[in-house]
Length: 366
Image (cartoon, rainbow, N blue to C red; front, side, top):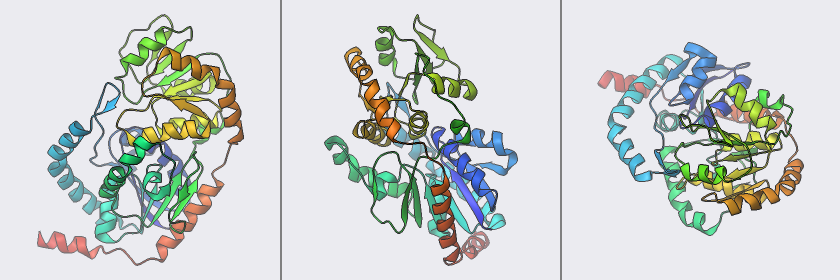
């Protein structure tokens, strides 16, 4: 048994949903301390109660389906002194009491900095590090931005001993000894669903600001159920849905295809259920743009920077092709994930012990 600090980024729910599945596997054999920020905190707290501890985190700012990098950085810098001081004090106290053997992080920066500072072995379980730790296929416009994005990832996550990276595209680890690829991590409740095609289209938006897309959808004969854009009035063929997980999953299993931004978790769950995907990635959100390009490259769907009526018609004319390609991506289990995670935990436990005396010295000095 290991003592594991599991920390989860809260920008969106994808990190929390994936982490829940891994946590369920780990808690059978290990003792866990769970920390989370943003939207991940209430999601996990609703499941695990007081054992989930809230920490400070940051999220992207969106306008007109575009990630506003300058505004996000400005907000980050303004809040950084307060948030970093609060996180350091709170997490230091938690670590002195819990004293984990291993950190597992789903792209949560504080965990990686404590790993660096205290030499605690760290395992990254997230899809984003695929960008920095693997050889990937990219169009020219993304290739030009790749060095900047990799530097940014390294700045936020300066240390990991091992990477366990879910992927639906063909990627190759740069260092196979410390980086392993697994199929996307899927919840059991998704595996139990029996997909059907009831003719409507499911739309899910990370950002509620893509109003141009709605004008295009209104011109078609399709019926749409739209999640993530609340407080809007229904239109003749567009129904805006309050988010309810049970209803969302029912619509996901029953829809004809999905229109989403580019979030990895919803893409993975849609593919598992055999649904073609039309991605409209948030501009300036490299991960979503990479996921969208990967959909086109694998033949599981397509993407557009801005949805037009003509593009939508072309996409729908290829639905049979997308479904055939997805059928070759056979349903998978988590056995490979469990095997590789068990191996990495074993390797981490063989490493040098964390330096918790540094926390005691700092407390004494200050």
